[in-house]
Image (cartoon, rainbow, N blue to C red):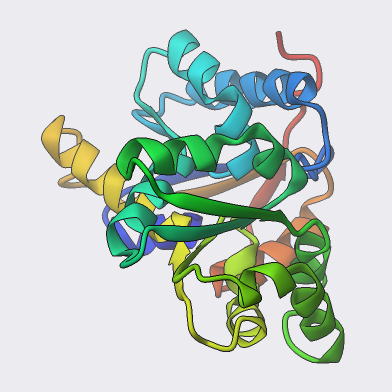
Length: 251
């Protein structure tokens, strides 16, 4: 998500918070995810940010309304933008969604797609092992391929023509996912769709940064060394300035 935002808005400074001490969120209860998400949002809001992007699909699925209600700045999730693009690009109205168990069980993508394209058929599938595979760098090869074919068998045999990658980790497995569905589906990256929505929102609300140096900060709730190794893989460049912060007792 951060990579997509920085590519779309190169003149903007960013503060990224990775709750590395408490991930993964996708297997936790909605109550716990909401509590952690609100803690993280309040912590970031105290850093004088002008807009918050909830990059986690699970947090967007279960906690976005409360964050929007409690913060005095725009809060953008990743589900609505991804659902909107999928509803637009699908020729048949048959759309697949893959994500963590928390995201899929929430029904958030299914409901959002139905709003943007009434009558659409949505086939949703949880793919919990995709996250650890992406974080370990196992994105291609026999093991990821076998996992992808197992998860995506029903989708591959269905009549859908569009597949939403409903987790920010999944684009790292894009080639493996595409191969598992025989390269016949249009893959929608919710991160790219969200970055475009953020750009439009900043422009329409006259919030675009027009001058000054650009700074990128990285905050994590566990050891920065592990985050730097994994995060660099996602960002496509080295991360050398991650800072550890404590949000465990925020309320």
